[in-house]
Length: 455
Image (cartoon, rainbow, N blue to C red; front, side, top):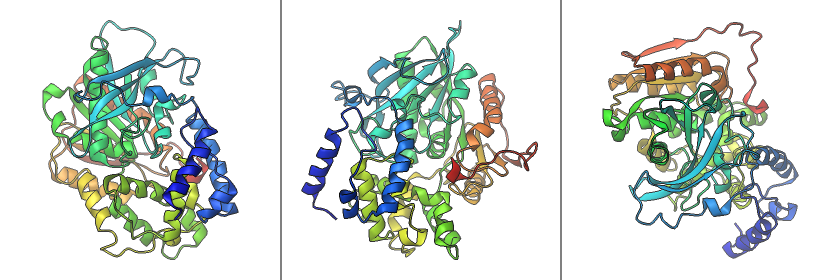
C-alpha cells in the first residue's frame, strides 16, 4: 500500500482537474500500476467509467451536498435544504417536477446523520394529496459522487419512473453517505438504509404537507429491496399512526454472509472466465467498503492482498457502480476470495445478523417479494429462505418468481405486478396469507432476457 500522504497528493492532483465531478476520476497508468492494475485492468476501468459518467451526469453541486448549517440540533425527519431540479438538466419524462432535499436521518448507533434525497411529482395537480411511494434504489456506488439525485434520470432503470407515470409522488433517498459525505455510506446495511427510507418519507411530508398523502408504501430493488424488506419490520411502521401500508422488495439483498459462501461454492470447478461472469463477483468491492463503513478497523482477511489493493484504487478514483467492479473484473473469484475460514468471515456473519431482514421480526403490513429465477447476484435460494423464515414469524409475504430473468431487468419486467399491488394497498386490499408462485411467461423462448454482463 502507498503511504497515506502520497495517496493524498495523488487525490488532490486528480480531483483538482475535475471541479464539477465527484466520481470516476481519471487515474494515470503509473498510478494504476502502483495498485497492481495492469493494462487490462485499466482498460476495464476506463470503459466502465464511461457508463458511470453517463449515469451520474449532472454537475455535482458541492454546495447543496455539503452538510447544512442547521443540521446541528435537528431531529429525524427535519428538512435541512430544499431546491428544485433544473428541468434543463433532467432526462426523465416531460411534466415531472422534481426537487432535491437534505434531511436528518438516523445512523446505526441511533445518532442523527444528514442524508439527501429527491422527490418527483406528476404534472397534473390533484384535488386530493398525491399518494406517496418511497423508493429505495439498488446499488449505485459507495462513494459520495454516486448519489442518484445527481443523475439526470435519478438513476432510473424502470424503477421509480413507472410510479410517477402512474400518478404517484415518489420520494427517493440517496442513503446517508451518498451525495452528502458526513459519514461513509453504509452499503447494504439494511437497518440504516431502512432508516434513511423512513425519514426521507417523513421529511418529504414535512416539506409538502398539503401535497402528499399521510399513507405511503415502500418499494426497493437489490440493496433497496433489502432496505424495503427491513423497513417492513421496523418498529416505527408497525402502528397505524405511521401511515405505512406495506412494501415491495425486488431482488432483495438479504444474507450477505450466506451469499459469499454460496458464491465461492458455486465457483468451485468453474474456469476463471466463467467465474468473472458471475454477477455476485462484481459486488465484492462494494461489500468490502460496506464492512469497513460499519467496522472501520476490519481488515477483511477472507480477501486477497491483490484484491484489497485494487479496491483502494477504486476508492482513490471514487468509482461508482459500473466501474468499481471493473477493478477486479480480470480476476477469477478464487483470486479475490482466498479463505472461507470461519474466523476470517466472523465479522461478515455479524454484519448479516445485524442487518438481514427475515430473522424473526414481526411485520404488521404485507410485503410483495419478487425474484428472478436466473439471478446470479441475489441468489433465488437465499430469497426463498428469507421468505420461509418471514412466514414462520407470522408475516404476510407474497413471493413471485420470474423465470429466465437476471438481476437488473427484473424491475421493469415485473412492473405490472408491483404497480397493481401498490394500487391495492392504497385501495385497502389486503394480503392475508403467505403464498409463492412462479409467474408464467407469455413466450419465454423469445422473450428478451439479457445476461447481467450485457446490461
